[in-house]
Image (cartoon, rainbow, N blue to C red; front, side):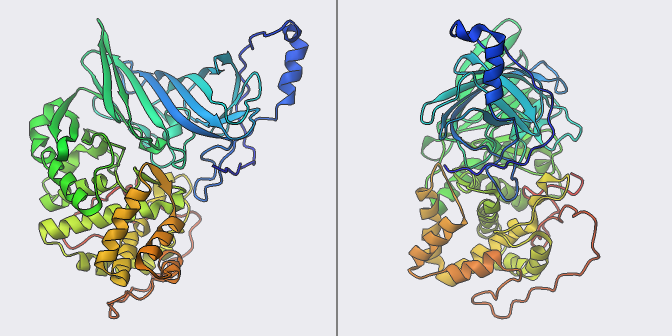
Length: 529
């Protein structure tokens, strides 16, 4: 994939050097080594030019696989000794390799088995191999480091500290707080996880279990994904947990991870998952991965998260009595729908986030309509009334405004939730229910295990509708004002409330909800983040 480097340097830490192995007598002299080092370009943080997160991702290579090994010390406030191994294919000749990594001490780096120089610059770890890496030949980078669950602004996120251990929440800009990576959803890869923890703890990760190695004082769990995954969707749970197993449609393995003390309390909710998977399959086709389940953590995050094959949920979603049953089930379906929309089909850029959240919100609302008599039209009409305000605050659905300073998660505003589901509602009204449903199925089958963007969606929709829909999408996805709703000429959008200018943009309000829906967001971070 063509990548555009971002070349603006940022201040970094002093260089750390590892002696190079001597290949010939000529290279034995210190002067020669200095000359070789001097020939490499000065380390600088790079990016692939994502409009919302320009520092994420790195040019010149595609990652094929990650092997992540963590040792949990028995405390969720101590660094985890870790080894990250990356297998990648250079697309250019590389004198240096930039990895995204911003939190944790790096102890050593090897490239293809040889010690390499490395330096932290901004949020990049810049690696200088002993020799330039040619394009097309696989490279193997091994980084020995600490993975730190403690930060000055905890829950920003990365590691999430729970009551009895740790979990992960890497969306959108936090995977590189946990492990060195090419931390952008456009570069998906296979993952292997090896987690060692003291006996009494249980570790679970994305994918299926490969091995459990029990020793006198600790146990190592190994998991591997069967499908490529974006770094933002990686998940590891370490805690005093129980893993509950059941069968889904067509024998799909379903496994849930819950605090052991709560397994009976949570079972009435967990047993709903197989039927929810069957419902989604009727709408869009076969479940795209090797397993699914819920990770219920005793933690306060302010959101639920669609980590691939193992969605993260707050315990209190299932235990607070003010949340109606239909609402909790709809939120479960929201994260399940992401397995198709966002996980299997991942966004090419973060501006394509509306394709993730709009579709997940759509199926959340459709499930509530079909299972709990909560009319989709009523919810969409309410969204239409608020749409101009959402666009003024957060930008059009496919051109969202950047994150507020110091609030990376503030890109998750109402315009990418109900505001984007509203675009899908308008599209269904425009092309008809049958074509719309065909589009949904074709979208996830065409781009299964891949990445896609807004232009891909527009092109596919126009082909299925057998007419050019570029004007429709231009207005609905990029317009400052909400266009008239097809089939509903009486719908009106309220005029945005004028507010005095502020020195810094604040995190957005939570998405509009249908009548009686409690004020808990779907993947929408709380204002206190």
